Length: 281
Image 1 (cartoon, rainbow, N blue to C red):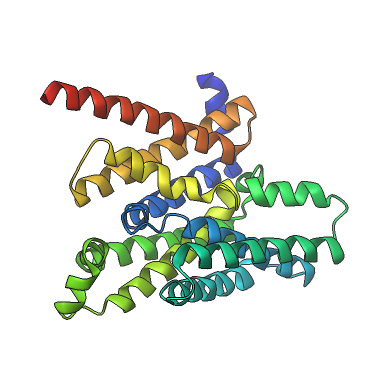
Image 2: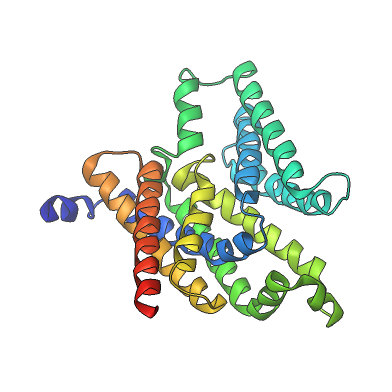
């Protein structure tokens, strides 16, 4: 098995998949803790459906670089979700459901009406579940993912204290003079960028798993925000690496395999947390 893995590692597409997979998993986990604590976990799911709609429009327009349309559309939708979620008439969960379902439906409708592919069902499956797209990355796409991932990490580190304050007590942050709305907007935009990057890794239907599972797993083991964030990042990277390697060796879909590893890690962390709690008693 090690010889087989060593053979595969010589191929550039495998190296690209590992680099991008690790970076996307890292970025997803950093803000995953914030989204879980703010009860906004499904924003990733909603924005991923919007990204699917943007990808469908880009495909209909025969755009060579779909990200040029997907990125601004997803960012605008993130801002709209934030604004609409603050509306007393339309709560956050209803706004997410409204935008995500509408975008998914219109995206699939456009792909059917203006289909330019002879294998529409295969294209839709790949987009929704990321079955092979991570293994077909070009060098340009890899560099774009590296640059945008580094930007996300730098933004998170630079604004860590503000994000921490807005996450735990938004009202107190406002009273202390922090522009909470601006930082909520920053979080929404960064999440939109992560969603677009993660489309190639796990597809639009499984993106929420990258955001939610590492954070929930880390919360089973630690209590402080910093410890949970660091643990979440480490778990996410390990699960992404393991999932990609297993999928390459076993020939299973990349996205589904990564999510399965995340689920297994969550189960192990739950068990470890219970055992540690029992020992403290």
